[in-house]
Image (tube, rainbow, N blue to C red; front, side, top):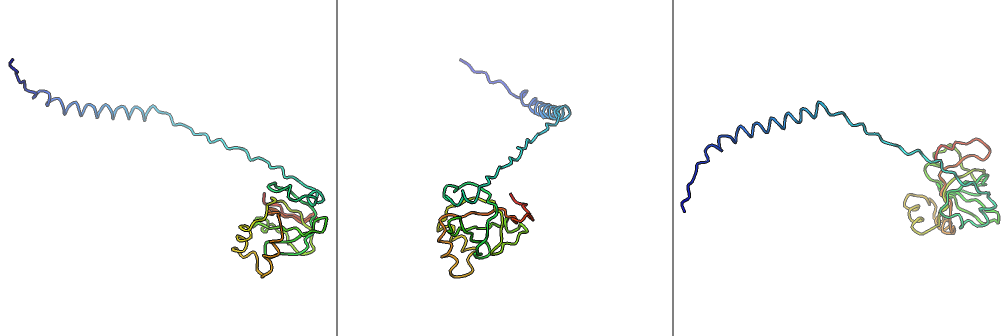
Length: 177
């Protein structure tokens, strides 16, 4: 059997023109897409803010069992401030005379309400169980300026992390929520 080798010289002559033709076809296709394509409008659907209904709790009910409110955001009205605890804390007395801790967050301190011993305020915040890690965090940010302040705070089993405060006499600035 004899094999006859044929020359491929003719195939090499068509390679360059076919390559150029492919580039022109791709370029023409991309031009056609840019002319005929319509821009896609992206619609971002924002979820409406939910109005969080804050649980207004009677102070007598709260005093009867503070631990049952742990994890809830509540509002207490007409709380009497017994004494201050550092720059961000205060004590109040429950109905049975037990001291109860209030911890004011930065947003609450930004409210234009002066928190003074013997004053009456309305507070909104979450009831949080006390732990050593919370006390350590408060101490790290300078929440206990006097030596005995941490020992006082250790007395609390739970406390209210106040996010908003207003004056109980009516003049309020409740800008945070």
